[in-house]
Image (tube, rainbow, N blue to C red; front, side, top):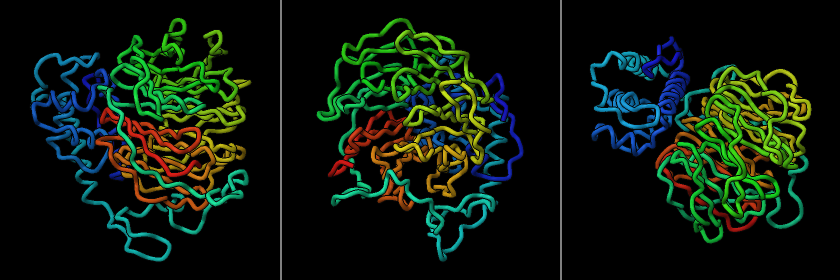
Length: 469
């Protein structure tokens, strides 16, 4: 799909409803970013009661077939905003020529929705969950007998709860942000939780008391898309809408030096190496940049190879690999020391790769995609580990492992978080629900007793377990 100057798209022929819906969602959210990344509430308010907050969340979250008038209402609002998110006047009129491509896209979706195959009936080795069968070339879905073994380092040890995945329950909702919460991160000692938002602020919280710590960190940007603590907890890095990276001192809540500049688009991913000597950043300019946090200087030339936005970056636990996921649908592995690619790109997802994460022992790499699935890879061989995790009906935008590796959490545009047992790759309990919109960020606390989630409903939620992992 090609994004036009007026924010609309040129439709392309697609043979699959899910693929076309996800592609439409990517273009809607690209349009949203170019119009200042307004909050769900702002879009709903500007629509003059044509569409509500929850409906906006579902449309931008890639859930189901929206009503045509609701989709067009969202587009009319976005097209009426300037690049700073300010309303330039009245809504774009319903007969504006710029809306026609979006109408055509909706008609294509409606046609494909009617042509979808019926779900498979219940049968051996599969649950009847209302999901159409996977393509013939797809990996086996959850519930079949082919499963990768749990890495040796993650095998159950002595003790009554060792190796047993924990159950999580809703504990609290942290409020204060006035825009979508797109990033959450715990400090290494677990005493701080940082949250970044489309309102342009970072907030620090005490996870034990669930109270804010100090005043919001306000940078020189309209939106904060990524946050990460350094291993020692002395630095907090934020990736920003204006293409910069800012370093902060969490203790004093003061900026450290000038912003790091070099990206030519928004910075949407940040990660420190395990020893804290490198900071990797990914952006909408399609590049990955490496920085020395101590000197705040770039390290070498940008890493190029992706052809579109780099949504995710993650170091392996031993620091010898850097994984990057992109809108181009691929995952690249890099050697941080030489800044060279390691092997060919990992391919298989049918949509943008929005999240990447290594298991605690480094033997698995999880990737989440706009195609609604999670894939597992062996980083050493760069081969898929036969399992394909399915169940979400929207983007999978977060894939963190629990600290002991017994759980994988997945956050999605279907407004839910799912937990998976890494020994069996079966779901653990029911999906975690409560967010009133797209779940954008998920993080485990260092001891595994807490799970933090951020969403487009402008809320941060804490979930807890009865015992440490």
